[in-house]
Length: 528
Image 1 (cartoon, rainbow, N blue to C red):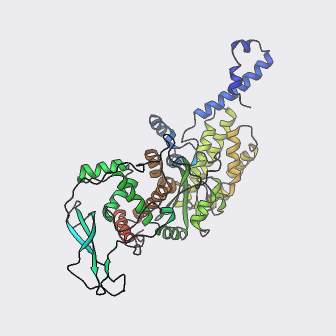
Image 2 (spheres, rainbow, N blue to C red; image 1 turned 180 degrees about the vertical axis):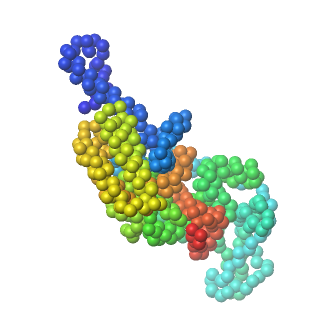
Image 3 (cartoon, rainbow, N blue to C red; image 1 turned 30 degrees about the vertical axis):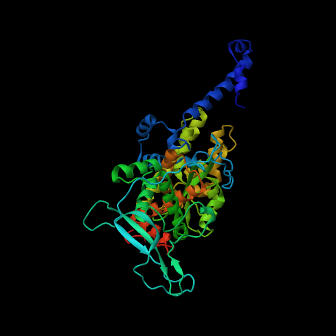
């Protein structure tokens, strides 16, 4: 049992002097055990444990990089380890995450909700922009008798709105040109005497998006909205920074509220495309999965990433098995590559990520306990030998199958695991039990060398989410989380398919604002 703070307070020089030799020896043993354990904890870093890369100070990374240089297989392991995200840190110790429905009220300090308070003075637009084009909206039929309305040049406009957008690019020219279109809603008198008015299209009410309006009456045009989304999600700029950039570079003034509404509206517009992404995911033969923590207004949620070479789907929700089951709809039968988190164990067709295991073995090898260090070094050496053999078999298959050639190494590793399964050293016992629990899954690449040994595809994809989390501290509402996940999925999928995310976002928003069918997701290039 580890000495507690209360117990240490009672120990001093006078107390030690009064102890008999036998008791002093026992106390020394306990103190030595605790010191070694604390030293091992201090030595933990992203290269020898599941600690996230962000837990390491910048000035410490250069030294580790130089120390990690070794054999090609070892260098590749370290490189893969560097791509790990914070999602792996609490996997063996995390409890159940709170449900999404249990979301506390955002305000804690003043007790007020974020944003402008009800009843406070508002502010209208002060920047006056020259109108460059006019678009008239005329009712097609009489709302009373249903007869078609004839075009009437003298029809008056009863209201209008201005839309700021980026004009289509001219071939051979570079740069952006803004245009301001005034949309005029006309009223037309029918032969029956009834006056009908044109109305802008608005999406019907949707509970998850009750505060996010989707329709034609918008200040920000579709192409400008696409630029704002890229700046927010891909370039990771805050609303205030986007506002400053538009003002400084383009002399365009938009409020932070308008920018935020544009992003959430785009998330709602893109919602029907989520099913298309899932359909692409379940048809692939190989899928990478990983997750990292994501705060939402004080609630700890998780950002999940399901990654294939040409499709990416992000999800934000609790750290539970239901997240994957709902996303994949129990329809995925390919290979799911993941780390050791228990949720992924529901899929039997699943190889394990070796760099995660190698980091834990390195932590054992660097232990202050000589016995634990010896076991860790021996296991680490065996795993490096197996990694090198698998890597070589991909380019030059050996005449003898790898499981037979390295049967002695595997048996020795299994013997070490079984011997220390109930070891009193907490870390050593945990690592060997993890190996034994997933033994078949871990050593599957020996029989199938073509399988990847790392989960780098998912971890590298999550890297942008991790950076966004450090900058923005997550999201502040369920709508914000859904918009972030949906739009990030679309942007990353377009990038992997060599398509312009900006152009596609603009077409999706333009179609959604008019209630038209959304354009399909860009196809996978033929050269892929």
